[in-house]
Image (tube, rainbow, N blue to C red; front, side, top):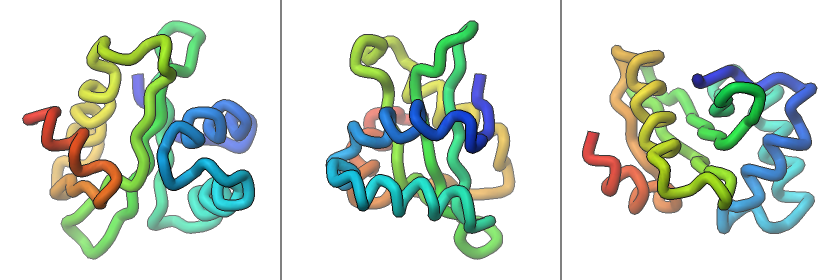
Length: 115
């Protein structure tokens, strides 16, 4: 289930985002979290299964019809189970009027989803 990021999930979200190649540096990671917390155009969601948070997906809402996937990551011990694909599908359902696009870091994954 896709849930919206809240401040009390900060450590979990930072841990998941740190799997992205662009988010290895702590200062960069803190800036990214702050961007999601302070900007209405940046939306971060977490994937929750039962009581565990297993993944994160972040988007930038640009224009009226585009949602660009900025970050997508899944806990390494839960990869290859379709969680990333489920997060993308849930986002499509949440934003049916927007075209989901990838950035240079999420493009390869989004291409594999074939949704």
